[in-house]
Length: 236
Length: 209
Image (tube, rainbow over all chains, first blue to last red; front, side, top):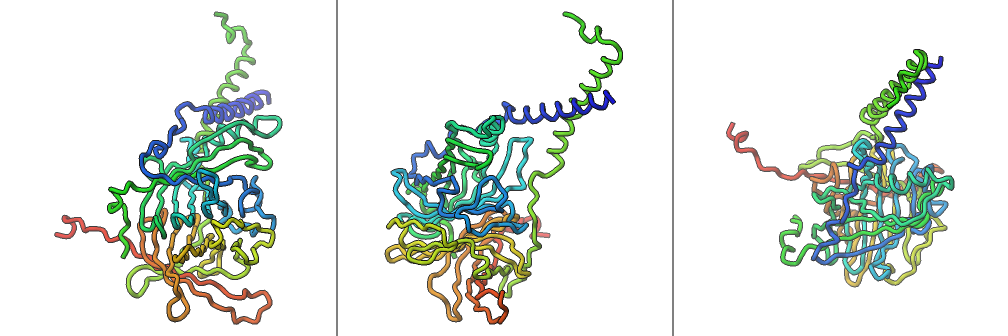
C-alpha cells in the first residue's frame, strides 16, 4: 500500500513540476516591442474599456469569470457559441475623446497549444469611427503571457487577486510580424488593407470577478501614401 | 559526499525509487495529455451550402426577432436590453448597433453577428459582420438603398479563416411572420451569402497534360 501511495505522490509531484516548467519556461518569451510602435506611417490609436461593467454591453455563456453586462443581456449558451464572447464598447482616441463604437467577437481557438505557450483566441472587431469610416479587424490573440504573469500569481495569492501593472500585446497574427489584418469598409479607409496590434494593460484582476481595472488599446497603421495604390483592394 | 541512498534500508530504497518513478510518469502523463487531448474542441453544426445558379456557393442564415436580438443601441431609441446605457456623446450620435445570434437553415444557432448603421454627413453606411466560431468571420458592406423586392445587397469585403480567400455578396431581407402561434417571432431577418472562390492560375504542367 505504501508503494502505491509513494507512486501516487510521485505522480502528483511530476504533474506539478510539469505545470511549473510550463509556466516558468524561459524559452516561451514575450514578443517584446510591437512592430507598429516604431512605424513611421500614420497610426490610428484607440483605447477602450476592457472591464465588462465599463463597456456598453458584454455577454458570454454566463458561467465564465466575467459576468455579462448589463444584467439582462442575452447569454450565448448554445453549444456552437458557448466559447464565444461579444462586447460592444466606446472607442476613444489618444486624447481620450470618444472616437466611435467597436464590437468585438472572441472565440477560443482550436490552434491553442499549451505545450508551446499558445493560449489562442480567434477574434474579430467591427469598428466605426466617424472620422475614418468602418473597419474590420481579424486576428489571433495569445493570452498565455497574461495567464502566466497575472492570472497564475492571482491563483497563488491568498486574496485570489492580483494588483500591479501589466501591459502586453495580445495580437499574434495572422500577419507575418504578428499583426492583425485590418480592412477598411467605408469612409476615409474604404478599400485599404492595414495592419493592427491590440494590447491590454491590467492594474487589478480577481479570480472571482475577472478584470477589475484594465484598458485595451488598438493601433492601426494606415498605409503610407506612396504605397496607397498598391494597398487598395480590387473591388469588382 | 555522504551516500544517502546507501544509508536507506531496502524497503526505504524501493519506496524512494517508486516515488521517483512516479515523478517521471507524472511528467510524461501531463505532457502526453496536453499533446493528445485538444484543449479547445469547438462544436460544429454541419454547413448547409448549396450551389448558386450563376457560380459560387450559397448559404442562408436567419435571425428570429425578437428572441435572437442580443443587444440594440441607438440614440433616441429604446435599448435592448432595457438596462443598456447607449453613449450620449455627439461623436457617436449617428451610429446604431445591433447584435444577434444567427441561425442556419435548420434553425440551429451557429454564430453571432453585428449589424451597424451609421449616418455621417452625406455618407450612410450599413455593415454586417457574421462570426461563426468554428469557421471564421465575414465582413459585408451593404448598399444603403434597398432593391426592388425590399432586399438589400452587399459585397463581402473581407473574411477570416475559412472565408479568408472568398469573395462574393450577401443579401438581407426582412420577412414578417405570418404564423398565428403565440411563441412565434414577429419576423426574421434572412441573410443569404453567396461565396465565390478566388481564381487561381493553372499550373502550366497540369494544363499541358
